[in-house]
Length: 543
Image (cartoon, rainbow, N blue to C red; front, side, top):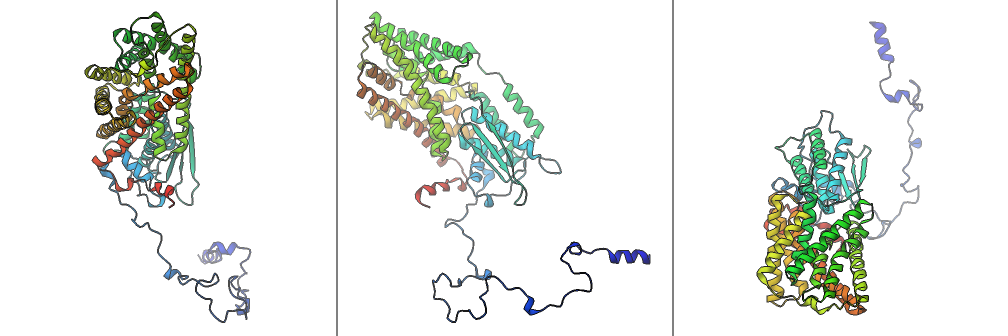
């Protein structure tokens, strides 16, 4: 026992006993004042200033140099907002926290159960990226994609996460603490398509993951995500092709066409759709698919004009343009730009420009060939739209209905967006035709109502706003102004043609900005956390 005590006494008591700079026992040097090191900031002997430095001197000791009298930490004048996050939909809760600085975000309230050792960081990040990929590929705005990714990560216990979304790249970084190494993962969106049925299913999954009363384990979330990827489209291929034809026919009726024009426009759109599918199957880029799809309606319109039949042949081409104009991509591009995602907005605007140029090339080639064969289209005929209110309202509803089918929307949302589109067209007709207001402001006001009602519907059902707004803007698309400009260019009237195309671009931007403004105006009718205000916008005002 005594021997054990001796061993215990000789055992090192701390890590300092192993230091090579620790003196052996019994040889500690005596402390001397001369040996004490001096601070490198201390004045050398004999050089202390006799008079204190004047106030404001660079060498003067600050009055608050002492930590005890240091100024308080910076706090904005309005203070950090305190948001009641649980009273709002998950989209607004996540946007609120994304706009907060990292160090003032509330501690996450663990929604889903994890293992005792903590969440599986790698699997949570992978699930988050896969969900974001489906949303971005479906055309969702960058802000909503980041909000969904942030909601999934926080629900599984990863609080210090920073998701980043660009046009084709998603990344997320998680840092457990200030002393741990961060973990980053990214994913590239290779294919993008339009399937709002899948988009709605992903939103429901994120909603369930964010809900406290629903238990969704990681395995269950992966299983549901796999089912969403494998799901069948709600409408068969023949129905999509028929919807494209009906859309073009309804659009031709909207701009003054009759029964024969309706049939011709529908036939041209069906042929264009089939040719585009053929090009897609051969692996041709989307640009050439739009070039090919724009040719059949233009060819049928030129053929009708050459036969001398007394019909409004220009309405056939205009109806085909309505079925091709990339309104969905334009709205998403402007939304990303207005919410501060400038890189994604620039890429999407560039995509819209390429698709629009593809449509122009396809129509111009046919119009030029028609002029060589002595076709005599009348440009002024495009602007002569006969006012038939009840027929136009019915045509606008058919247009929106078929547009929703082409977007692969759920059947439960098709009727709602059809009514939303009818309200938009009635508003535009009342302002422009009855009230005499120019088309650009009339379009912006009508699109604002589309965005307002679409956002309210989406918040009521905790879903994406795209299925309630995208198809509803169909009747407002500038098909007539686009064709009028192309026809003038084909007749070598460049100045007038470019002016009409600029007018078409202004109408398209009015649609996109109006939809976004209406979505923001919906905040007046909803309970939104006060922290959801975009305080980062002060950067552009010099703050």
